[in-house]
Length: 175
Image 1 (cartoon, helix red, strand yellow):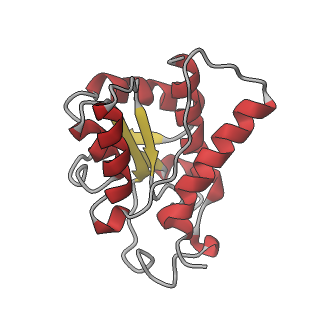
Image 2 (cartoon, rainbow, N blue to C red; image 1 turned 180 degrees about the vertical axis):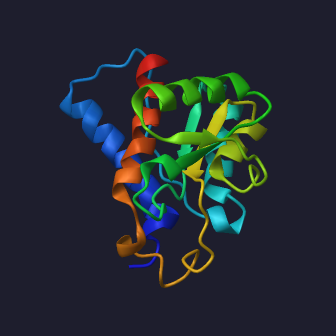
Image 3 (cartoon, rainbow, N blue to C red; image 1 turned 90 degrees about the vertical axis):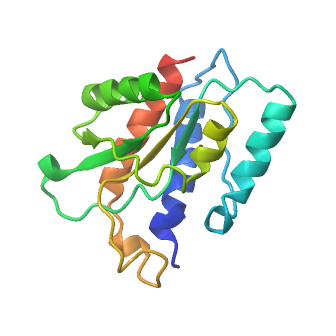
């Protein structure tokens, strides 16, 4: 089924984080919500509605971690694997913390290319004053993007799991 990387990989990450926390009886001090938004390609409407409602109701959100397109990584040379950690003006410190978690818990390198930071669900949270990060593959394949080739056979699940480790560490260490 097309959509394996964009964005079944992000939904799978949320489910895996919830599964691991439940399995280990993790009891956070703060509420952790696992959300999958719709309509990103049509104006990031799902996250716009959620973040807008959150700010109107004065909801306290410590951070928003967005996993979008985290499963495409060709090759088996682990030294070539990197994750792009996109941040915003109010979340540079959180990005630095994510980079530390990346170095501590994974073998991934990290980059910080914010070129398209307004194209993801995390942008709507930043626009409403919340700290947000967007994790995505450092490689982009236009042959697979929004095509019938975006299938699980073209995904690298070991790579994806390394990104999930960063998010898990951020959630645990910030709670």
